[in-house]
Image (tube, rainbow, N blue to C red; front, side, top):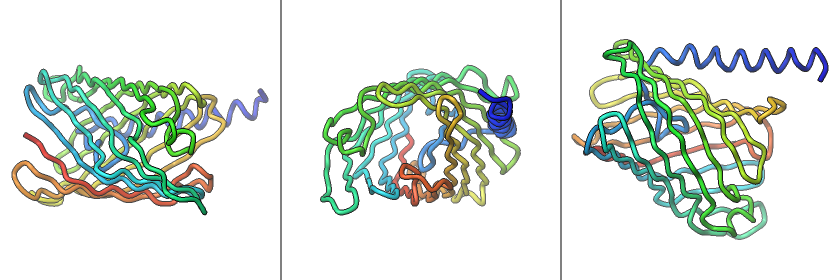
Length: 255
């Protein structure tokens, strides 16, 4: 590796973690409708269930999940058990739609620091994903094989301004591993509406390629335990896999 190449990768890595350090002064606002997550857990014996419609359009393909389920349950105050999955439809340019059950994702989140006692919320959230429908992987609409994502989340709140940061390494069975994460900002506009913004950074394992997805959205309280979830964004790299449009609409239930 040349000295110049090493310095470029070193600079990218430093900037990546600087962004996460800035975002770590926060109370988590990740999770649906955004891509990243936060240290928050539902609470002992409580549920957080999000049913959404994520839509992604790239240069060559369009995918959407019909009734994508994000199910979370808290066996203890600081632990969360999660499952994600849904029915996926996808098509490439000039081809017909293909459908099948999307890749499933199971995870366990442990929040080991709380802002009330430590000045910051912090959690680890190991997740295992596995291909559920082989035909979707062959068509390029989902990852083949299995994968493991090992992120850590940071969070803190400052009045109505709420910030969050996540960074993790993703092991992929049949693709190059990658780093993923970034900052999230939330602002409580009033008792009913929360505004959200996110920058999602993705690097391959050697920091030779990268992508940045910017998205924003909101959560709107419809009733005491029901929220409307909306977000939209796009990737900034002109690559086949970079989303030209990312859109999420859903409903969240907390009880």
